[in-house]
Amino acid sequence: MRANPQSMTAHDGAPRPDCLRDTDNSRQILGGIGKTTLYELIAEGELNTVKIGRRRFVVDSSITSYIER
Image (cartoon, rainbow, N blue to C red; front, side):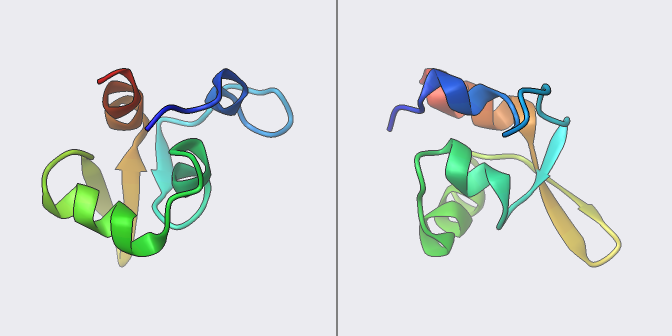
């Protein structure tokens, strides 16, 4: 999978945050993958997550690493 270089920033041109909600921008950055594929990548250890309260966030640096691989 390859991401569009324009997707490396938020829609308004601002840098991406350190963590992204798994069902929001992280799927778009990874080329519009579905929820199932995203959760498979998390389960396989391809993407790192952080849980804050009940919400799970994908660590931005793990998305960048995955794209580079």
